[in-house]
Image 1 (cartoon, one colour):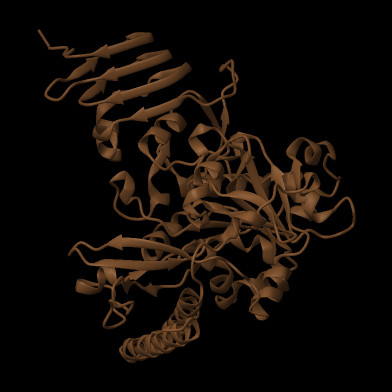
Image 2: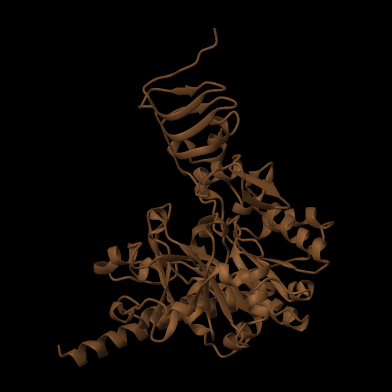
Length: 497
Protein backbone atom coordinates (compact mmCIF):
# COMPACT_ATOMS: atom_id res chain seq x y z
CA UNK A 1 0.00 0.00 0.00
CA UNK A 2 1.36 3.45 -0.87
CA UNK A 3 2.10 5.89 1.96
CA UNK A 4 -0.84 8.03 0.91
CA UNK A 5 -3.10 5.00 0.87
CA UNK A 6 -1.90 3.93 4.31
CA UNK A 7 -2.53 7.34 5.83
CA UNK A 8 -6.00 7.50 4.23
CA UNK A 9 -6.75 4.07 5.66
CA UNK A 10 -5.60 5.22 9.12
CA UNK A 11 -7.75 8.33 8.78
CA UNK A 12 -10.84 6.22 8.04
CA UNK A 13 -10.14 4.00 11.06
CA UNK A 14 -9.65 7.09 13.22
CA UNK A 15 -12.96 8.60 12.11
CA UNK A 16 -14.78 5.33 12.75
CA UNK A 17 -13.25 5.11 16.23
CA UNK A 18 -14.29 8.69 17.03
CA UNK A 19 -17.80 7.89 15.88
CA UNK A 20 -17.92 4.73 18.07
CA UNK A 21 -16.69 6.70 21.09
CA UNK A 22 -19.24 9.43 20.41
CA UNK A 23 -22.05 6.82 20.38
CA UNK A 24 -20.80 5.22 23.60
CA UNK A 25 -20.65 8.61 25.32
CA UNK A 26 -24.20 9.41 24.17
CA UNK A 27 -25.39 6.11 25.68
CA UNK A 28 -23.70 7.02 28.96
CA UNK A 29 -25.16 10.55 28.94
CA UNK A 30 -28.73 9.25 28.59
CA UNK A 31 -28.33 7.50 31.97
CA UNK A 32 -27.57 10.78 33.81
CA UNK A 33 -30.28 11.98 36.21
CA UNK A 34 -31.77 15.33 35.16
CA UNK A 35 -30.00 17.34 37.92
CA UNK A 36 -26.61 15.97 36.76
CA UNK A 37 -27.26 16.11 33.03
CA UNK A 38 -25.61 19.47 32.19
CA UNK A 39 -22.60 18.77 34.38
CA UNK A 40 -22.11 15.30 32.90
CA UNK A 41 -22.48 16.67 29.37
CA UNK A 42 -19.69 19.20 30.02
CA UNK A 43 -17.44 16.44 31.35
CA UNK A 44 -18.09 14.12 28.40
CA UNK A 45 -17.64 16.96 25.87
CA UNK A 46 -14.31 17.77 27.49
CA UNK A 47 -13.30 14.13 27.26
CA UNK A 48 -14.25 13.97 23.59
CA UNK A 49 -12.00 16.93 22.81
CA UNK A 50 -9.11 15.31 24.67
CA UNK A 51 -9.72 11.96 22.95
CA UNK A 52 -9.79 13.67 19.54
CA UNK A 53 -6.39 15.23 20.24
CA UNK A 54 -5.07 11.90 21.52
CA UNK A 55 -5.91 10.25 18.18
CA UNK A 56 -4.33 13.11 16.21
CA UNK A 57 -1.00 13.14 18.03
CA UNK A 58 1.49 10.40 17.31
CA UNK A 59 4.98 9.81 18.66
CA UNK A 60 6.85 11.89 21.28
CA UNK A 61 5.28 15.31 21.70
CA UNK A 62 8.64 17.11 21.66
CA UNK A 63 11.30 17.24 19.00
CA UNK A 64 14.48 16.77 21.06
CA UNK A 65 16.56 18.76 18.57
CA UNK A 66 14.51 21.90 19.30
CA UNK A 67 14.97 21.79 23.06
CA UNK A 68 17.27 24.50 24.35
CA UNK A 69 18.29 25.79 27.73
CA UNK A 70 16.07 28.69 28.74
CA UNK A 71 17.60 32.18 28.33
CA UNK A 72 19.26 33.57 31.47
CA UNK A 73 16.61 36.20 32.18
CA UNK A 74 13.69 33.78 31.82
CA UNK A 75 14.50 32.06 35.13
CA UNK A 76 15.17 34.59 37.88
CA UNK A 77 16.92 33.73 41.17
CA UNK A 78 14.58 34.14 44.15
CA UNK A 79 17.21 36.32 45.90
CA UNK A 80 16.84 38.92 43.16
CA UNK A 81 13.03 38.95 43.56
CA UNK A 82 13.37 39.21 47.34
CA UNK A 83 15.94 42.03 47.13
CA UNK A 84 13.23 44.34 45.74
CA UNK A 85 11.67 44.33 49.20
CA UNK A 86 7.99 44.88 49.94
CA UNK A 87 5.84 47.95 49.35
CA UNK A 88 3.95 49.73 52.14
CA UNK A 89 0.61 48.69 50.66
CA UNK A 90 1.22 44.92 50.90
CA UNK A 91 -2.35 44.46 52.20
CA UNK A 92 -3.88 45.81 49.00
CA UNK A 93 -1.56 43.55 46.98
CA UNK A 94 -2.63 40.51 49.04
CA UNK A 95 -6.29 41.37 48.52
CA UNK A 96 -5.81 40.61 44.81
CA UNK A 97 -4.73 37.01 45.50
CA UNK A 98 -6.69 33.74 45.60
CA UNK A 99 -5.01 30.58 46.94
CA UNK A 100 -5.94 27.36 45.09
CA UNK A 101 -4.93 23.95 46.44
CA UNK A 102 -5.07 20.81 44.30
CA UNK A 103 -7.09 18.45 46.49
CA UNK A 104 -8.10 15.65 44.14
CA UNK A 105 -5.86 12.88 45.47
CA UNK A 106 -6.64 10.01 47.81
CA UNK A 107 -4.34 8.73 50.55
CA UNK A 108 -4.28 5.20 49.12
CA UNK A 109 -0.52 5.16 48.42
CA UNK A 110 -0.01 5.71 52.16
CA UNK A 111 -2.59 3.10 53.13
CA UNK A 112 -5.29 5.63 54.08
CA UNK A 113 -8.93 5.82 53.04
CA UNK A 114 -10.38 9.14 51.90
CA UNK A 115 -8.73 12.39 50.75
CA UNK A 116 -4.98 12.64 51.27
CA UNK A 117 -5.44 16.17 52.65
CA UNK A 118 -7.12 14.71 55.76
CA UNK A 119 -4.05 12.70 56.87
CA UNK A 120 -2.52 14.01 60.11
CA UNK A 121 0.98 15.36 59.47
CA UNK A 122 1.99 17.31 62.55
CA UNK A 123 0.57 17.54 66.10
CA UNK A 124 -2.73 16.03 64.89
CA UNK A 125 -2.98 18.74 62.19
CA UNK A 126 -3.89 17.57 58.68
CA UNK A 127 -2.63 19.08 55.40
CA UNK A 128 -5.93 20.96 55.20
CA UNK A 129 -5.66 22.26 58.80
CA UNK A 130 -2.18 23.64 58.10
CA UNK A 131 -3.35 25.32 54.87
CA UNK A 132 -6.28 27.02 56.63
CA UNK A 133 -4.00 28.13 59.51
CA UNK A 134 -1.49 29.68 57.07
CA UNK A 135 -4.11 31.72 55.23
CA UNK A 136 -5.94 32.74 58.41
CA UNK A 137 -2.60 33.98 59.78
CA UNK A 138 -2.11 36.09 56.62
CA UNK A 139 -5.62 37.54 56.81
CA UNK A 140 -5.27 38.43 60.50
CA UNK A 141 -1.74 39.83 60.19
CA UNK A 142 -2.44 42.07 57.20
CA UNK A 143 -6.19 42.57 57.71
CA UNK A 144 -6.92 41.05 54.29
CA UNK A 145 -9.42 38.74 52.66
CA UNK A 146 -7.43 36.04 50.84
CA UNK A 147 -9.82 33.17 50.03
CA UNK A 148 -8.91 29.47 49.84
CA UNK A 149 -10.21 27.41 46.93
CA UNK A 150 -9.98 23.62 46.87
CA UNK A 151 -10.04 21.78 43.57
CA UNK A 152 -11.61 18.46 44.59
CA UNK A 153 -12.22 15.37 42.51
CA UNK A 154 -15.26 13.10 42.66
CA UNK A 155 -13.08 10.92 44.91
CA UNK A 156 -12.51 13.61 47.54
CA UNK A 157 -15.42 16.06 47.27
CA UNK A 158 -17.92 14.55 49.70
CA UNK A 159 -15.44 13.81 52.50
CA UNK A 160 -13.79 17.23 52.13
CA UNK A 161 -17.09 19.12 52.30
CA UNK A 162 -18.07 17.30 55.51
CA UNK A 163 -14.87 18.45 57.18
CA UNK A 164 -15.07 22.08 55.98
CA UNK A 165 -17.77 22.85 58.57
CA UNK A 166 -15.10 22.82 61.28
CA UNK A 167 -13.47 25.92 59.74
CA UNK A 168 -16.64 28.02 59.71
CA UNK A 169 -15.32 30.21 62.57
CA UNK A 170 -11.93 30.77 60.86
CA UNK A 171 -11.07 34.00 59.12
CA UNK A 172 -10.82 32.36 55.70
CA UNK A 173 -13.53 32.07 53.08
CA UNK A 174 -13.34 28.57 51.62
CA UNK A 175 -14.71 27.63 48.21
CA UNK A 176 -14.63 24.31 46.37
CA UNK A 177 -15.09 23.18 42.80
CA UNK A 178 -14.72 19.78 41.19
CA UNK A 179 -12.36 18.76 38.46
CA UNK A 180 -13.91 16.77 35.62
CA UNK A 181 -14.81 13.09 35.73
CA UNK A 182 -13.66 11.31 32.58
CA UNK A 183 -14.22 7.69 31.46
CA UNK A 184 -11.28 5.29 31.40
CA UNK A 185 -10.88 3.59 28.04
CA UNK A 186 -10.12 -0.02 27.21
CA UNK A 187 -6.50 -0.25 26.05
CA UNK A 188 -7.41 -2.57 23.15
CA UNK A 189 -10.72 -1.21 21.83
CA UNK A 190 -10.13 2.42 23.01
CA UNK A 191 -13.83 2.54 23.98
CA UNK A 192 -15.07 3.72 27.40
CA UNK A 193 -15.29 1.02 30.06
CA UNK A 194 -18.30 2.68 31.75
CA UNK A 195 -21.80 1.69 30.68
CA UNK A 196 -23.63 4.42 32.62
CA UNK A 197 -22.84 7.54 34.69
CA UNK A 198 -22.83 5.88 38.10
CA UNK A 199 -19.51 5.39 39.83
CA UNK A 200 -20.47 2.77 42.34
CA UNK A 201 -20.60 -1.02 42.10
CA UNK A 202 -18.96 -2.41 38.99
CA UNK A 203 -18.56 1.11 37.62
CA UNK A 204 -16.30 2.26 40.50
CA UNK A 205 -13.14 1.92 38.47
CA UNK A 206 -14.61 3.17 35.19
CA UNK A 207 -13.96 6.87 35.91
CA UNK A 208 -10.95 9.02 36.78
CA UNK A 209 -10.04 12.68 37.44
CA UNK A 210 -7.95 13.76 34.41
CA UNK A 211 -4.91 15.31 36.12
CA UNK A 212 -4.49 18.84 37.43
CA UNK A 213 -4.27 20.38 33.93
CA UNK A 214 -8.06 20.19 34.12
CA UNK A 215 -8.02 23.18 36.51
CA UNK A 216 -8.39 25.78 33.74
CA UNK A 217 -11.66 24.50 32.28
CA UNK A 218 -13.12 23.30 35.59
CA UNK A 219 -12.37 26.56 37.40
CA UNK A 220 -13.87 28.51 34.48
CA UNK A 221 -16.96 26.27 34.24
CA UNK A 222 -17.59 26.48 38.01
CA UNK A 223 -18.24 30.23 37.73
CA UNK A 224 -15.64 30.97 40.44
CA UNK A 225 -13.18 32.47 37.97
CA UNK A 226 -15.66 35.18 36.93
CA UNK A 227 -16.75 35.73 40.53
CA UNK A 228 -13.17 36.43 41.67
CA UNK A 229 -12.43 38.70 38.69
CA UNK A 230 -15.62 40.62 39.62
CA UNK A 231 -14.27 41.00 43.17
CA UNK A 232 -11.04 42.55 41.85
CA UNK A 233 -8.83 39.48 42.33
CA UNK A 234 -5.96 39.24 39.83
CA UNK A 235 -3.82 36.15 40.51
CA UNK A 236 -4.20 32.60 41.74
CA UNK A 237 -1.43 30.80 43.59
CA UNK A 238 -1.82 27.12 42.73
CA UNK A 239 -0.01 24.27 44.48
CA UNK A 240 -0.39 20.65 45.58
CA UNK A 241 -2.01 20.40 49.01
CA UNK A 242 0.63 17.84 50.06
CA UNK A 243 3.51 20.29 49.43
CA UNK A 244 4.00 21.76 52.90
CA UNK A 245 6.55 24.26 51.55
CA UNK A 246 4.01 25.96 49.25
CA UNK A 247 3.08 28.97 51.37
CA UNK A 248 2.06 32.41 50.07
CA UNK A 249 5.28 34.28 49.28
CA UNK A 250 4.86 38.06 49.51
CA UNK A 251 8.00 38.82 47.46
CA UNK A 252 6.84 36.76 44.46
CA UNK A 253 3.35 38.27 44.72
CA UNK A 254 4.81 41.78 44.80
CA UNK A 255 6.96 40.99 41.75
CA UNK A 256 3.79 40.00 39.86
CA UNK A 257 1.75 43.00 40.96
CA UNK A 258 4.54 45.52 40.41
CA UNK A 259 6.60 44.12 37.52
CA UNK A 260 10.01 45.83 37.28
CA UNK A 261 9.79 46.35 33.50
CA UNK A 262 6.09 47.32 33.53
CA UNK A 263 5.17 44.24 31.47
CA UNK A 264 2.67 42.10 33.39
CA UNK A 265 3.71 38.49 33.79
CA UNK A 266 0.83 36.04 33.26
CA UNK A 267 2.45 32.88 34.60
CA UNK A 268 5.18 32.18 37.15
CA UNK A 269 6.49 28.68 37.76
CA UNK A 270 8.56 28.14 40.88
CA UNK A 271 11.46 25.83 40.08
CA UNK A 272 14.25 24.61 42.34
CA UNK A 273 17.64 22.97 41.87
CA UNK A 274 17.62 19.25 41.12
CA UNK A 275 19.24 16.77 43.44
CA UNK A 276 19.79 13.09 42.64
CA UNK A 277 16.33 12.40 44.08
CA UNK A 278 14.61 14.69 41.56
CA UNK A 279 15.96 13.42 38.24
CA UNK A 280 12.46 12.51 37.04
CA UNK A 281 10.93 15.93 37.72
CA UNK A 282 9.65 18.06 34.81
CA UNK A 283 12.09 20.75 33.69
CA UNK A 284 11.75 24.19 32.08
CA UNK A 285 13.23 24.53 28.60
CA UNK A 286 13.18 26.98 25.72
CA UNK A 287 11.19 25.51 22.82
CA UNK A 288 10.26 27.36 19.65
CA UNK A 289 10.86 30.69 21.38
CA UNK A 290 8.66 29.98 24.42
CA UNK A 291 9.27 28.64 27.91
CA UNK A 292 8.05 25.06 27.94
CA UNK A 293 7.69 22.40 30.63
CA UNK A 294 9.07 19.04 29.49
CA UNK A 295 8.09 15.95 31.48
CA UNK A 296 10.00 12.68 31.43
CA UNK A 297 7.05 10.92 29.72
CA UNK A 298 7.49 13.19 26.68
CA UNK A 299 11.17 12.49 26.21
CA UNK A 300 12.19 10.06 23.42
CA UNK A 301 13.75 6.93 25.00
CA UNK A 302 17.17 7.65 23.50
CA UNK A 303 17.38 10.95 25.41
CA UNK A 304 16.02 9.94 28.85
CA UNK A 305 19.50 9.80 30.43
CA UNK A 306 20.31 13.24 29.05
CA UNK A 307 17.01 14.54 30.48
CA UNK A 308 17.89 13.13 33.90
CA UNK A 309 21.34 14.73 33.85
CA UNK A 310 21.76 17.21 36.68
CA UNK A 311 24.39 19.14 34.70
CA UNK A 312 22.30 19.87 31.58
CA UNK A 313 18.90 20.43 33.21
CA UNK A 314 19.64 21.87 36.62
CA UNK A 315 16.13 22.70 37.81
CA UNK A 316 12.70 21.08 38.06
CA UNK A 317 9.11 22.23 38.47
CA UNK A 318 7.80 22.39 42.07
CA UNK A 319 4.20 22.80 40.80
CA UNK A 320 3.91 26.05 42.77
CA UNK A 321 2.37 28.32 40.12
CA UNK A 322 1.18 31.94 40.04
CA UNK A 323 -1.29 32.57 37.23
CA UNK A 324 -3.20 35.63 36.03
CA UNK A 325 -6.98 35.21 36.32
CA UNK A 326 -7.66 37.52 33.37
CA UNK A 327 -5.27 35.48 31.22
CA UNK A 328 -6.96 32.19 32.17
CA UNK A 329 -10.33 33.71 31.22
CA UNK A 330 -9.01 35.01 27.87
CA UNK A 331 -7.27 31.76 26.89
CA UNK A 332 -10.15 29.57 28.06
CA UNK A 333 -12.63 31.59 25.97
CA UNK A 334 -10.31 31.37 22.94
CA UNK A 335 -9.87 27.62 23.54
CA UNK A 336 -6.13 28.39 23.40
CA UNK A 337 -4.67 26.55 26.40
CA UNK A 338 -2.38 23.91 24.97
CA UNK A 339 -1.20 21.06 27.22
CA UNK A 340 0.44 17.83 26.13
CA UNK A 341 -1.56 14.67 26.76
CA UNK A 342 -0.15 12.27 29.33
CA UNK A 343 -1.22 8.68 28.59
CA UNK A 344 -1.41 6.85 31.91
CA UNK A 345 -1.84 3.05 31.63
CA UNK A 346 -3.62 1.26 34.51
CA UNK A 347 -4.75 -2.27 35.26
CA UNK A 348 -8.15 -2.55 36.97
CA UNK A 349 -8.79 -4.98 39.82
CA UNK A 350 -10.36 -7.49 37.43
CA UNK A 351 -7.21 -7.48 35.28
CA UNK A 352 -8.55 -5.25 32.49
CA UNK A 353 -5.90 -2.97 30.93
CA UNK A 354 -7.14 0.59 30.51
CA UNK A 355 -5.63 3.97 29.72
CA UNK A 356 -6.52 7.34 31.14
CA UNK A 357 -5.75 10.59 29.34
CA UNK A 358 -4.44 13.35 31.58
CA UNK A 359 -2.89 16.83 31.43
CA UNK A 360 -0.62 18.73 33.83
CA UNK A 361 -1.31 22.31 34.98
CA UNK A 362 2.28 23.52 34.43
CA UNK A 363 2.33 22.37 30.79
CA UNK A 364 0.13 25.38 29.90
CA UNK A 365 3.02 27.78 30.58
CA UNK A 366 3.71 28.09 26.84
CA UNK A 367 0.20 29.45 26.21
CA UNK A 368 0.66 32.47 28.51
CA UNK A 369 2.43 35.75 27.74
CA UNK A 370 5.63 36.88 29.41
CA UNK A 371 5.99 33.69 31.50
CA UNK A 372 8.75 33.46 34.08
CA UNK A 373 10.52 30.81 36.11
CA UNK A 374 11.70 31.72 39.62
CA UNK A 375 14.42 29.54 41.13
CA UNK A 376 13.26 29.26 44.74
CA UNK A 377 14.97 27.73 47.79
CA UNK A 378 14.41 24.02 48.30
CA UNK A 379 12.37 24.85 51.42
CA UNK A 380 9.44 25.78 49.13
CA UNK A 381 9.29 22.17 47.94
CA UNK A 382 8.41 19.88 50.84
CA UNK A 383 6.05 17.25 49.42
CA UNK A 384 4.73 14.40 51.55
CA UNK A 385 4.27 11.46 49.19
CA UNK A 386 5.41 8.63 51.50
CA UNK A 387 5.81 7.83 55.19
CA UNK A 388 9.55 8.56 54.75
CA UNK A 389 8.55 12.17 53.93
CA UNK A 390 6.09 12.10 56.83
CA UNK A 391 8.85 11.13 59.28
CA UNK A 392 10.86 14.20 58.22
CA UNK A 393 7.99 16.68 58.69
CA UNK A 394 6.91 15.14 62.01
CA UNK A 395 10.44 15.35 63.42
CA UNK A 396 12.33 18.08 65.27
CA UNK A 397 14.01 19.03 61.95
CA UNK A 398 11.07 21.40 61.50
CA UNK A 399 9.26 23.83 63.74
CA UNK A 400 5.62 24.72 63.14
CA UNK A 401 4.42 28.29 63.30
CA UNK A 402 0.95 29.46 62.14
CA UNK A 403 0.59 26.46 59.83
CA UNK A 404 4.03 26.90 58.22
CA UNK A 405 6.93 24.49 58.67
CA UNK A 406 10.44 25.92 58.79
CA UNK A 407 13.76 24.12 59.18
CA UNK A 408 14.90 24.21 62.81
CA UNK A 409 17.67 26.69 63.56
CA UNK A 410 19.36 23.97 65.60
CA UNK A 411 20.20 22.05 62.43
CA UNK A 412 23.69 23.06 61.37
CA UNK A 413 23.24 22.48 57.62
CA UNK A 414 20.11 23.36 55.66
CA UNK A 415 19.88 20.13 53.62
CA UNK A 416 17.18 17.59 54.40
CA UNK A 417 18.37 14.08 55.39
CA UNK A 418 17.75 11.23 52.97
CA UNK A 419 15.23 8.84 54.57
CA UNK A 420 14.22 5.47 53.14
CA UNK A 421 11.75 3.43 55.18
CA UNK A 422 11.05 -0.12 53.98
CA UNK A 423 7.73 -1.70 53.03
CA UNK A 424 6.80 -2.47 56.68
CA UNK A 425 6.36 1.30 57.08
CA UNK A 426 4.36 2.07 53.89
CA UNK A 427 0.96 2.42 55.56
CA UNK A 428 0.53 5.32 57.96
CA UNK A 429 -0.98 3.14 60.70
CA UNK A 430 1.95 0.66 60.52
CA UNK A 431 4.44 3.52 60.48
CA UNK A 432 2.88 5.12 63.59
CA UNK A 433 2.84 1.77 65.41
CA UNK A 434 6.57 1.31 64.82
CA UNK A 435 7.62 4.62 66.42
CA UNK A 436 6.80 5.08 70.11
CA UNK A 437 7.96 8.64 69.56
CA UNK A 438 9.57 10.35 66.58
CA UNK A 439 13.38 10.16 66.94
CA UNK A 440 15.64 13.19 67.32
CA UNK A 441 16.94 13.72 63.76
CA UNK A 442 18.69 17.10 64.02
CA UNK A 443 22.10 15.61 63.16
CA UNK A 444 20.92 12.91 60.76
CA UNK A 445 22.29 12.69 57.19
CA UNK A 446 20.89 9.38 55.97
CA UNK A 447 18.51 6.78 57.39
CA UNK A 448 17.64 3.44 55.78
CA UNK A 449 15.31 1.04 57.58
CA UNK A 450 14.29 -2.34 56.19
CA UNK A 451 12.26 -5.21 57.65
CA UNK A 452 10.51 -5.62 61.00
CA UNK A 453 11.96 -2.73 63.02
CA UNK A 454 10.48 -0.72 65.91
CA UNK A 455 11.77 2.39 67.69
CA UNK A 456 11.40 3.03 71.42
CA UNK A 457 10.87 6.46 72.98
CA UNK A 458 13.48 9.25 72.72
CA UNK A 459 15.79 7.57 70.22
CA UNK A 460 18.43 9.82 68.65
CA UNK A 461 19.75 9.26 65.10
CA UNK A 462 22.94 10.96 63.85
CA UNK A 463 25.09 10.77 60.73
CA UNK A 464 24.35 7.70 58.61
CA UNK A 465 22.18 5.01 60.22
CA UNK A 466 21.24 1.78 58.46
CA UNK A 467 18.95 -0.73 60.19
CA UNK A 468 18.20 -3.99 58.41
CA UNK A 469 16.16 -6.82 59.96
CA UNK A 470 16.41 -9.91 57.79
CA UNK A 471 13.33 -11.98 56.97
CA UNK A 472 12.02 -13.59 60.16
CA UNK A 473 14.13 -11.36 62.42
CA UNK A 474 12.99 -8.35 64.38
CA UNK A 475 14.95 -5.38 65.63
CA UNK A 476 13.68 -3.25 68.53
CA UNK A 477 15.71 -0.06 68.96
CA UNK A 478 15.60 0.47 72.76
CA UNK A 479 14.26 3.67 74.35
CA UNK A 480 16.87 6.41 74.71
CA UNK A 481 19.29 4.76 72.24
CA UNK A 482 21.72 7.03 70.41
CA UNK A 483 22.75 5.65 67.02
CA UNK A 484 25.54 7.58 65.30
CA UNK A 485 27.05 6.25 62.03
CA UNK A 486 25.80 2.74 62.82
CA UNK A 487 24.71 -0.30 60.84
CA UNK A 488 22.35 -2.53 62.83
CA UNK A 489 21.44 -5.90 61.36
CA UNK A 490 20.38 -9.37 62.41
CA UNK A 491 18.07 -9.82 65.37
CA UNK A 492 17.84 -7.39 68.26
CA UNK A 493 14.79 -7.94 70.40
CA UNK A 494 14.23 -6.30 73.74
CA UNK A 495 12.14 -8.58 75.95
CA UNK A 496 10.43 -7.68 79.22
CA UNK A 497 12.00 -9.61 82.09
